[in-house]
Amino acid sequence: MPSYIAVQNTYDVFQIALFINDILVGKKREDKHYTSKLFIPILDQLLQEHNIRINDLDFCAVNCGPGPFSTLRSILASVNGIHAASNLPLIGIDGLEATFLEFYDKQYDHTAVLLNAFNNEVYYLIAQEDTILSKGYQKIDTFIYQLHEKPIHFIGNGVTLHQNLIKQTLGDNAIIKDPNPSMCSIEMIGKLGLEKWYNDQFTGYLMPLHLKKHAVEL
Image (cartoon, rainbow, N blue to C red):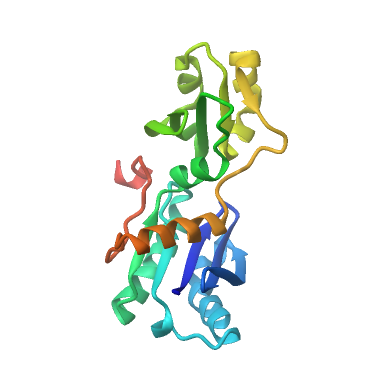
């Protein structure tokens, strides 16, 4: 059975988890502002605590976004550097899809996952039953007004941020659970990474899934 690490950012912190034989055996977290400085030391500490070396790992699964631009770039620069130094296989996970898969509720025909894209924008995923129909980003008011008049199960930190507008616009057609999940867990990142590893879906260097360009790129 494989041993591997999973990496996650939650908009507030970054997390690194170690899995051995499919079991999460250790997890570290730190404020996202220290990602560049502390990612490697925290990873090293986690591995040392379990007498594991980088070369003992089978792969690294990473939430590639969408998410906060600077934190995501720092994480990917770190894991890409590890890949360059050790040839550790990397597996990229789509954060929108992971959030949908973790919290999808089959009692609702339609699901919308919204993650905060800042500046009153959201990254979105729309699904009908268990089929993903579309993904992208848009201004929250434009996105909400375009939705059809039908019950939709909303998930994600973008929902919590814009809950009042969603409720005012869609009324009872907006289904928002309490508590509302903010985004996928690091356990889900590890689970999806393992599935991809078994299917030989690992790659070399990873790129961020921003879905939109940063202001400096425009």
